[in-house]
Length: 352
Image (cartoon, rainbow, N blue to C red; front, side):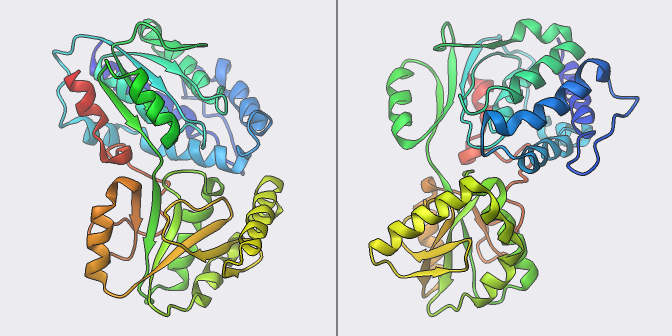
């Protein structure tokens, strides 16, 4: 099975996913296997929130559309051009997936397949439906992949390497349990924004997307702001006001009420706009419905701080204030070559 064969299969999956839109899904006659999968996938999207209360249709469609845009011939070729998998001896790579946002483990899944290895997947209990469905689509389009994909109901067995994602606590378990295997173990990370007071309303609206997409549950969601000393947050609150409807979602509202109450009972000083609290705090990980902030006096000192604490940070967002930062509004739209934790998954798979 050639790399070209697998690339073409993923391109077909991208075409399949591109049919599904929040406002107006419609089947395209040239898409393969629609007779078997189109209606079933619509039904699965509609039922996703019943499987995981955080998987609203809006967020599931967003994840699907992101993958539809990623899985193009141009993107796949640009991504894969620097790797050579011609002499790979196929091994079995176990994946232990998270379930915080829809299809969060799909990138690891396609990395293993494209690299020439076999994949054994342990899905999260919070996301057991979407990835197996897409795997079924892939094997229907390309039956040669059938023997390359296995989903495990229990613990992973008979694997040669592993990629596992979890909290800092579960990562310690992973590190012990998988200590004798080549591995990538991912822990908690959070994303930050660096502001300097020159941001526009459009910048803050885009930053709102970075904060509220997936209700802030992803490691690429901004959970911390770095702002100049004596910064005034009025423009920030004005810019994110378009996301006010998030408070009408019960699970988010419950977190907002609870976390706000905890902060107030602890006599913390808060700024609050009715659907988001912001609190001065040196931590990177803020609870749902809250964002932390920290003042800085010198941008160069802040750059050094961020570099020294990079193992806690997934993304940095700014208007080019920090060399490694990405633009506002793009944290949840990574390219295929944007690796979690800046660990090159393909290089790891090339070397096991």
